[in-house]
Amino acid sequence: MSIIDLMFQETDPDKIRQEAEANYKEYVNPFALRMLKNASLDIIEDKREGASVWDISGKKYIDCVTGAGIFNVGRRNPEVVEVLKKALDKYDMGSWISLFRERGLLAKKLAQITPGDLKFSLFCCGGGEAIEVAIKLARAHTDRTEILCMENGYHGVTGFALPATGRDVYKTPFLPLVPGYRHIPFNTLQAAEAAVNENTAAILLEPIQGEGGIIPADDDYLRGLRRLCDEKNILLIFDEVQTGFGRTGKMFAAEHSGVAPDIMVLAKSLSGGLYPLSCAVFTEEISDFLTAHPFIIINSFGGTSLACLVALAAIEFIEKNNLPRNAAERGAQFKTGLQALQQKYPELIIDIRGKGLMLGVEFPEESIGPRMAYQLKKNGVISIYTFNNPRIIRIMPSLVITKEEVQTVLEAFDHSLAEIRNQEARFKR
Ligand SMILES: Cc1ncc(COP(=O)(O)O)c(C=O)c1O
Image 1 (cartoon, rainbow, N blue to C red):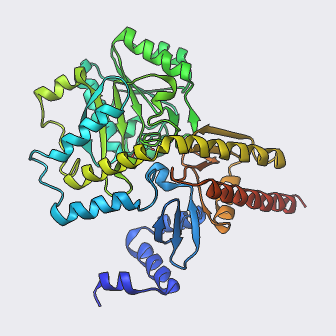
Image 2 (image 1 turned 90 degrees about the vertical axis):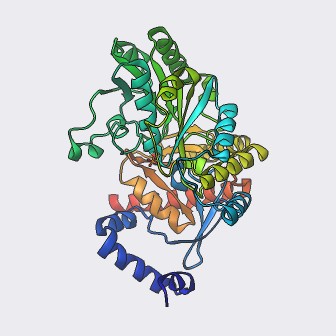
Image 3 (image 1 turned 30 degrees about the horizontal axis):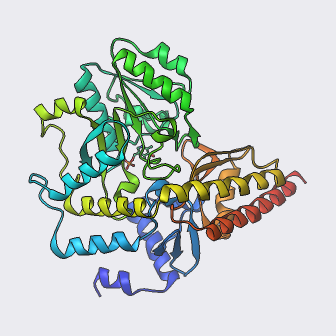
């Protein structure tokens, strides 16, 4: 039997798991397998639908990870799947060096829905690549080199993006990195004011730090950064890779503060969860450099026919179903429920924060994050602690999640916290 036939025909969950684990151990990465197991993320996904996934044994989970914000429109959104199927009947990816009708349509749509004067789009595949585009454009446009970025920020691990990521563990083995990046404390305007100089090209930040522990930037801070950038002719870059497309209760997190960046980086949910796509959207003024050098930042797989059609379908679905509003309402429901749980388990929950359906629950010590993920998995919820801070479990479900499903997740939290409380009592004995 061919490998593909075997893949689709084998239904014995034990056999499937044995095979997958053996291949990971032998050919992928044995330590990655161990880490996935330790983080309770060794689920082998089978069916995927709406806010849920089913593993190969048929157990259903509500997905509160969604790849850190990839599946805003839900897992295998039927309307987006339909568009991809239709596209596949006619197209392939398209040759990157030709004129794409669908790329133009998507760029126009992004210009319409992104804040302020953002207008032109340059497409890539991953978030890190689009961050690279933003940084290159900032340097080329300003003719300055320094990029101010945030302690504990996360912007990916590719060449020009890695130095912007604010955690040494990702960087140290690969020194020397691209120079010219400086990290400053997040949410402190004085730090930014003190750090800018005549060589500052841009300030780069996430409107809500995701991997840093779900930490929202204050609206006044963002307004202050905008003022500072305008005064000094510095570009403001928002990384909306996790926060974009309705996640925070608005189409883009920038809208909460009313601050429009000069460059916005989008990825994850731009893909509709079906076809990789990312982009940097920037103002006409910044586009001058690329107008003169149109093929200096290129990407064979960025902005293909299939990707752009999927992205257009995903955006249409988000708008038609007002997913930002659902994110705001379901997020408020989560916050109320979690606050009640904080009252019930005050020794276990020390903070609940975030916007819309980008929420973080903070525990008093690092071991509780992974233990909660384990308990939540037993109770039918997939969750993960944030990469830069394991004391924080994130709640980032699909934006199609229903009121009833939120209630189910809250009940799973209640049962899991009760178990952790029992464990803590046993440890103390
Ligand atoms: C805020 C943010 N920026 C950039 C990236 C990098 O995206 P990618 O992994 O697609 O390169 C990520 C990935 O999680 C992210 O969360």
